Image (cartoon, rainbow, N blue to C red; front, side, top):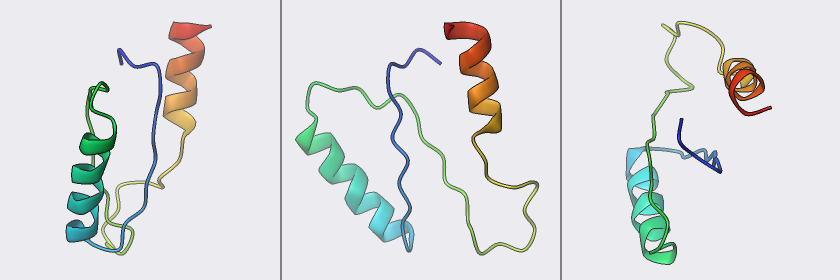
Length: 64
């Protein structure tokens, strides 16, 4: 992943997410945003539950 931190945020809509990202980039000028993803929590066609299981497995295998 190439990261030393993670931030999880929940937003009511895409406009709220966009505003958050703009503010984050302004307040953390020396921090690089490596990546992000959006997942709708109201979509009925989810592929699986949103959990931290896979992140935990990755971190356990690659960092510890």
